[in-house]
Image (cartoon, rainbow, N blue to C red):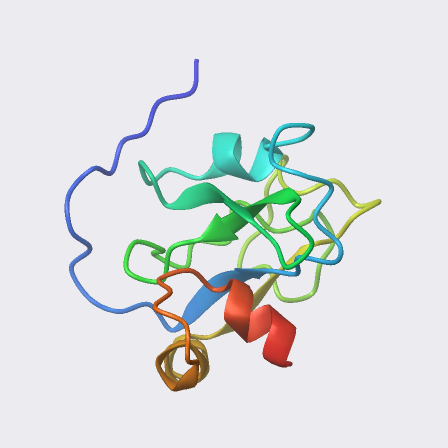
Length: 121
């Protein structure tokens, strides 16, 4: 049974953070494996991409950098696990937290997810 064990604020900023590539995400309603893998309640949310398609996005303020959502075999994953974004899509990468925060803050949009970082890189 999947449970969201972490519901409070994180203790410190992570070294890396998950970033979903909106062009590679299969869609929030069709897949959502990353949401199931994430141990943090409300961290991976559904939002519309630039084409109006619902995709998964990671909340910068909640991600703990565990990498459980990252594709199996992806070199940016911080640990070995048995679950994550399907290899056919490989839509999630871990990026340095400080770089992502700078990109999000520099964007004109009032956004709290990492989608803008993926679009910028």
